[in-house]
Length: 369
Ligand SMILES: Nc1ncnc2c1ncn2[C@@H]1O[C@H](COP(=O)(O)OP(=O)(O)O)[C@@H](O)[C@H]1O
Ligand SMILES: [Mg+2]
Image (cartoon, rainbow, N blue to C red):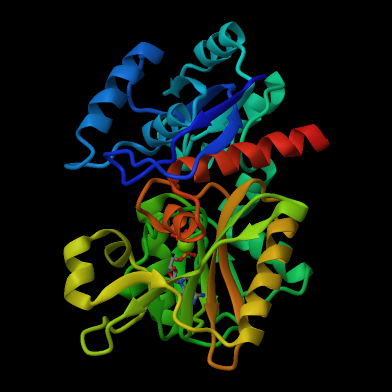
């Protein structure tokens, strides 16, 4: 294939000439979950154009940002949104024959626990695709199983107990309070509030039933790790694995909430964040030994959980320098201007280069297989 020269991506709504990237053009299909049924690639293209044009006012859906960046990188791109019609996806891909599929699916039929389904289908149909395999998506979605895997490799994880749907808290768990109670298989801080941190067994029982009723899934209660909260973004595989600049969740000392945790409000509600002085910043200084421990832990966890191409790990570091893994995000949010894309930008990859880096990681993996 002839090399293609693309301009680097600038801020979201305009392009700035920058250092040139040399790359090979490919046919890249972007597969994602969508609420729109019966839409084909032309409908999504129209929607993408509308959302990209209005970027200043409202950020486009992640799949449209990815597709737009791939196009800016010079690739031929086709959008495949799936609501519930798997047959349409299979026939559409078979007709178009992509060189690579960029997996942007976060759910199936609105159900996040079925996030693994589209990659499983791509696997079954023999396509090359970006990101984690179904195994990693399923293991990391379950906050109890993933902790068991990490503990096997000697990685520090909080002590925990899990309660299946409708299972009662019969006796005090053999753990030290405070505990934090979370849905077993949710993400984006769903079900995480100040009331998630419990000090005794009766509030534990109450919160576990609340999770069961509200989320219709099991609950996990973990020992609360009081420490700095760090998010580590990773791209690549094996020898090309790169740990991007670390992000930290910080709380203004004077106005912070009682429990310094990433509740749903703390993560997503801009006015609450401002009121409580909550910010995501590049990590404040870390001792060299701690930084090395973080990097080593992340490399081990990435491998232990079969993560691929890109992922983000949520950690806490206690005052004694111990690194605790809270969870792994096998399919992290990669929209422009959010933690992972910001970390990539800090490492010198503007958005288009970041998306291309994920593509390169996937292609290299298949070529070395
Ligand atoms: N064991 C723990 N100790 C302290 N804080 C925790 C613990 N588990 C979760 N948290 C807090 O809750 C947030 C969300 O938990 P996490 O397991 O990352 O779930 P999600 O998948 O919703 O992001 C974390 O970012 C952290 O602030
Ligand atoms: Mg998290």
